[in-house]
Length: 274
Image (cartoon, rainbow, N blue to C red; front, top):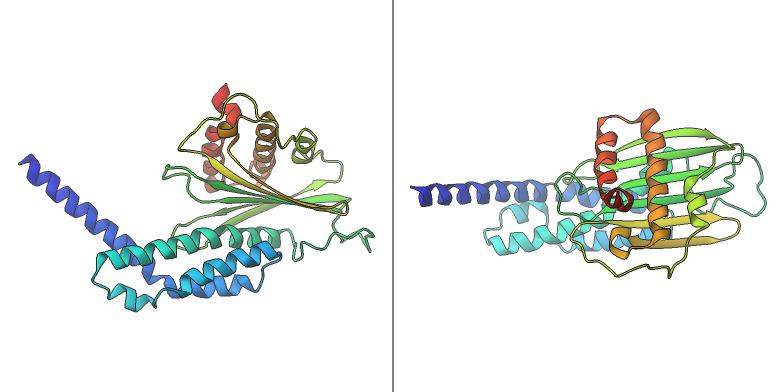
């Protein structure tokens, strides 16, 4: 009797998984079209290259109808894997574009040595927060974009909302020009080779991508959750990113943003060490 129940449960699970896969594959034409549209809006070479890579993966696949008519489950799984890989690449960049546009940032090269007027940015920074966990509640990326205009700051916090498509939720606030940016402060203590103690291996974590642009220069830094690398400097940066996002969410956030912060906070290295 118990064996029969287990067999029924397995069959039911397989059916649900198959339905989920076929539903997502049915969205392939929409996914392809959205990647093509956002590729035209890309602002950096890296962004363009990543979206082009995602588009190339999608274009290797047959159209949605042909996939759904496929009988071989192994072929369906392969196509599904390619589409999900393309979506995971594109999702981060599409969220970045949408979040940047929320603070009216249309050109990452807008920072110039000589500002023509107050509408020109003094400096810009952004961070992609990319969960790399096995938690169902923490799989989708977030984005912070901060534009300093001298007299004020525009700060945006964006979230991806669905594993099916590229839907987003973005909130933004304006802060006074005398705001002390915790992220900029944290960079003063950055030491790229400052790894303390032994490396730790963990299954859960977060991947961070940091972009800065000022008249002094540009930078791109990527690192894993400092819980893995045990770096005091990167742990400070991680906390600074969280505090900036929290400032936006405290003022404008709704349940979806608050839920994300709650899970993110539990992954912070400082939270784990307390």
